[in-house]
Image 1 (cartoon, rainbow over the protein chains, first blue to last red):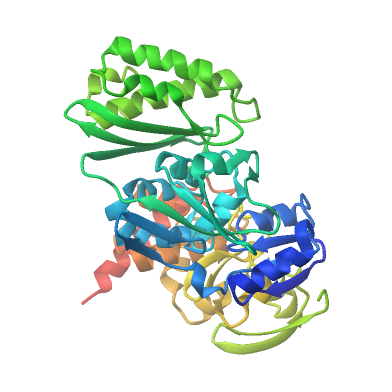
Image 2: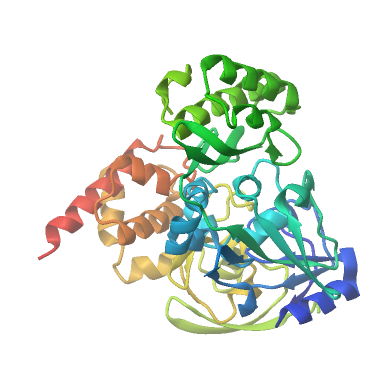
Length: 293
Length: 161
């Protein structure tokens, strides 16, 4: 189908975009890459009265490292993330994950900020932000505020953003020494939305996790930072310890049924992902009963 | 502001000035305003890849881009690539390998395949599959398409000095 009629404004700056959003509230929608918004409009799932196009705002672009912080502008496209030497050096989890986001033609338009603000529970980047302990930078007329990624995602297509605010950047801690990451997803076709997926970031000292953040996606209404992973930190991970964590994960998750998979299948796949992740991060093939990734 | 807006862009190296409604997507602009009907419209929500065109040298879904967003850009369609001879060998390989039946997906397939071949001179079959994963074909079962892209890549390597 075609999108219904709307008015269009090309914002010239963040200040200008915020003025438009304040004036029009939830009758307006922000357009960045359009790779989620345009399908929703073409399917008439949403019919905003005004489109505020932020695509030309130069201050929302760019990837920069400052001290221990990697800052990524909201308009950074998936293809920019994929090719960025700063990202592969300081947040290689993202480089790996973004290859799973849709297809080349979509990665050439889709943006990080757009993906996070859209907050599809099956998408990869929100989970990566949670795993990487990112801070989401939100701009409003009162100024900027910072929200931990874990608190930013509220539900299906729901975030902490109000209709008068703009997501302007994310800040990631630069990867520490002894860091390790893991990313895997199950999807029907490469680039399709995941049936179940895992983005994980860890600090491994010897053969022990000093830190382990496992963010599961497509198994809940938002990316889920697994509490179960804490059972694997600062202990020698034996098959029994892992088994305990898998049981805890299974109890913690509350996945949904849809045409792609039942809740029990998703719960099963999440456990497979956890086992593969732990095995991969520790370099312990013996822990992965499900076979190599 | 629901009134038509002026846009200026290059399409296949020709300057185009037009007035378009904000809701008009780039695919429909190319097809209905410029009669460049080689760009096909399939699903209209970014899944099928039939509407793939180049904007500023990069492939995009023209059904997921507004014509007003194309203001100031350079757009190339399958007509441009075909007329310039840029994809002549790829088109020949598609014909030779029966890599099309109804042909609906073919313009998008050619755009995506050419995009891959520009970035990777010698892609393996897995890489070809991955790059074309966003383009649906309901006729061929894909094997012949992968063959055609692979053969074209080999041919181009052979022609290099």
